[in-house]
Length: 120
Image 1 (spheres, helix red, strand yellow):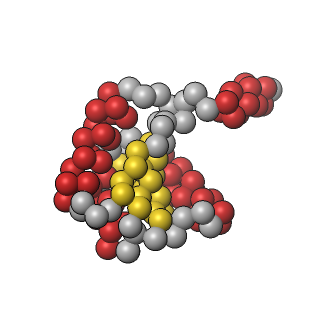
Image 2 (tube, helix red, strand yellow):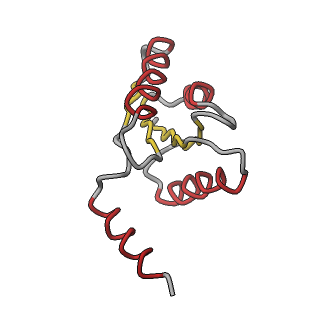
């Protein structure tokens, strides 16, 4: 069973965190993953570890950890790698795989261009 663990920074503002719920709902419609779970690095819940445990409890044998971040900064390269390592140590039979952040994907440039031209 394949899971998707979406990871955002987290905010004190619920409407900011709701964006990740929207992404999860849209990804669910695409039916590429058996289970989709949101998580946050800080400021709100569930945290990454707890969300990873939810994936395991739902029966996932492979979990793609997708950073909903633009660049591979300290959070992505250090904090998320550490979170993945801890989950792998705790659940050695589960394949936790950390995806790249969104930033340099070619399609993102199209979205940036679109947003820039939407301004009246």
